[in-house]
Image (cartoon, rainbow, N blue to C red; front, side, top):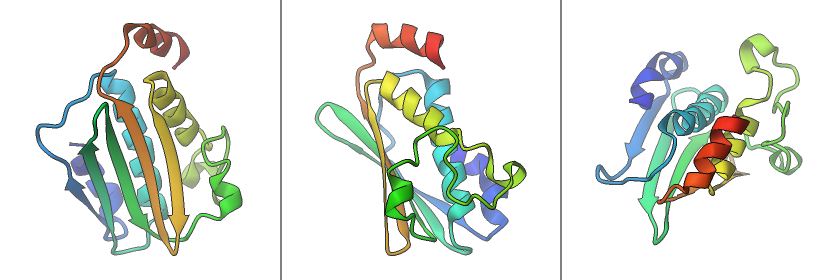
Length: 152
């Protein structure tokens, strides 16, 4: 659904999204908050992808968790930016205005939501390929639910 909703943003630079997600994959969590995580990551992938490239979204089941990755081709994120990319107000391109590039909060919010779900989020970038990976436990703890409502 999200890939379809992003069609206008993706088509602006003739990008596409390819889903490699098993239909029966399931995790427990706050659906609205997790959608926000994936929207923020996909928005960044669309903004920084080279024109006419594919953004690949994969999900795989592991023993106790699910791994979701977003892979795009574009400029390599420098190591010094990768180390702070999930910090509040971090923006890859300081020349971009908030009208086009946002305030630098999307990935910080994504990290907070993922952590409150008991998961992990990271980014790797090399040779023009950038991959954001989110790992979430299959089971959502009730104590985490209260933290989500109070903190996000």
